[in-house]
Amino acid sequence: MVNKADRLERLKVLQEQARNQEQTSYYGVFSEVSDCANILNTLDPQKRKPWLTDVLNDMYVKQQGICPECGLKMDHNDYEVDHKVPHKFGGGNESSNIQLVHPKCNRLKGSSVDTSVLLRYLEDRYQNL
Image 1 (tube, rainbow, N blue to C red):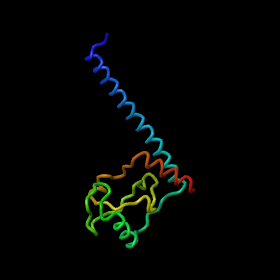
Image 2: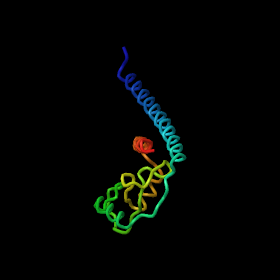
Image 3: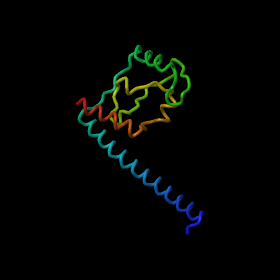
């Protein structure tokens, strides 16, 4: 008969194995999706263009002046345009891919992107080629 301490130890070992497997799987998927983004960028490169003042004002109003990264209020002239899916991964300037954020939040986010968001975005781009 296995005692309670042995069962708890076994549970800890299994939890650690599950965390390691999850992390390995995540990095594998992200690597594959990043490779797909590079291929799409080669086929159909995204181009940066200047932002129209009216577009920025409309975005500010739509977001109610709230930074989606930290949830705090932004000053009307103290924000940056953030690409939810960065140019590095093929993100474009369409309204569904941009948001206004604090400059500090934009620096903290950098070129990071959630794998599921990136995959969905790339699928949409691929369908529109």
